[in-house]
Length: 138
Picture 1: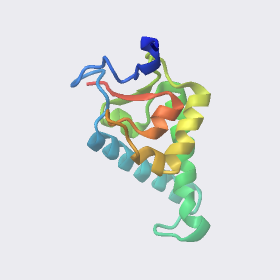
Picture 2: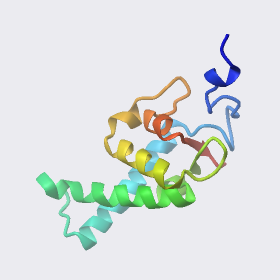
Picture 3: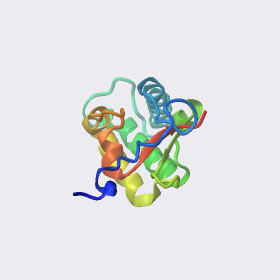
Picture 4: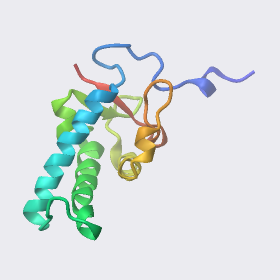
């Protein structure tokens, strides 16, 4: 017989709706779009990014996005888009992700595929691997 901890998913025991419940797909996409737009503006202003640029030019917003995500999620648990949509990224113990989990989550998020592969709770593979949850704050 296995211990109860062996099959415990950090998403279990969370409310289904409201504060503390797992962030839903549409608000997460909305937060992503806000962050991407802001990062594209920053890349255009400071990195000479041209909208619709190809080749290495097209990666400038992704670089800004990665830096923004790493710094903000690792330290305060949310990006600007997360804040607008009432989301927060935390460890299961309700603390901010920290530098290592924040870095792992950011790299996997930038690879896209781990972020769109979800479990039965709607939790992205990038969050599962980083040991984080994206939760609603309201």
